[in-house]
Length: 441
Image 1 (tube, helix red, strand yellow):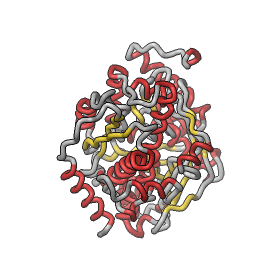
Image 2: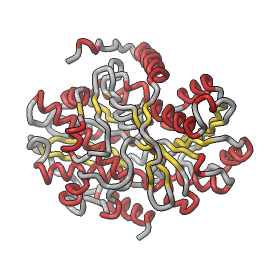
Image 3: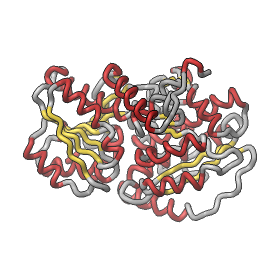
Image 4: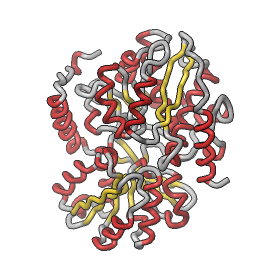
């Protein structure tokens, strides 16, 4: 079965399986909701991510008997990447289980914006690993948002660092043209403030080319690219939009090695549909890439092919499957961290939030968890809900992704003041009194 065929079959299985009623949760079970999308235009990207998350939870239950003896019970809710459906899923699942939802992973910046208003009321943390509101890294204002591993502002700055390096340095950006082809949604608009500011500082022309949902119609945008001849194109797409962009670039003879996608535009579903036209395309990595690391052995042994897993062995190690594993691991380790304070029992969202804010994954801990070589150490604090601002670049050679850069770290002299100013403005608009993080423990 072809790649698209496997995704279609998985989507059908999810739709059928999702109709089954789940049993009531026992008193010693931790409930974790999963907002997913296995149908629609974004399914090719949503399916492997959901599979990775679910398999990690299954593995923890089967191998370890749960988190410190507390079994994980998780339930998927199909959003189709739609904000209204995401909010419906949130409202339906937030109070489920003996202590309510541990946290939510919206997997959508639009849903994240909506839940940002609800989380402080319901006291449920929102994990937005590599996405969401960039200013929400400021935990003094956004107490319940956790954009772990990297925000879009970090991504935009790192992308421009890589482009500048290819051009011989930041000074050589002057007079160049950089185009942004972006999903016309909160997600796609996130990098714009950083790119506007960098254009002012470094003297390059910044061209904005929005693409309407779901992204299959892009001919006018690429006609503009053919006419304006930018030196580089940044791609901020998702789902079918990404492979469409690669195909349209080929149609107007724009070189794919002068395209650089964000980490949500750098997985197998983004390049395989375009075939050989994808060769040379580049994208950021959210630290990890494709391939297997030590944890995969336990996932294959304890989860894949068992207990409702929809994963195929040949898909294990794909970029988005790995991202699902990483995302689930961060949530599990936040719960484990919170249990050290509150006890080995099902925890409330408020208790898990404390665990997230005190999450400290050292090199030794990452190695013990089987993520050695996939992630750098991560430490979250009251003031810093992002915790890490590093990324690499990989490139598609027609068959696999190859890492082509060293690590980049975003420029906090640029981004830090933007975070402060934007989060301060939000706090004033919402009448939020920022926490004094020096007094948090």
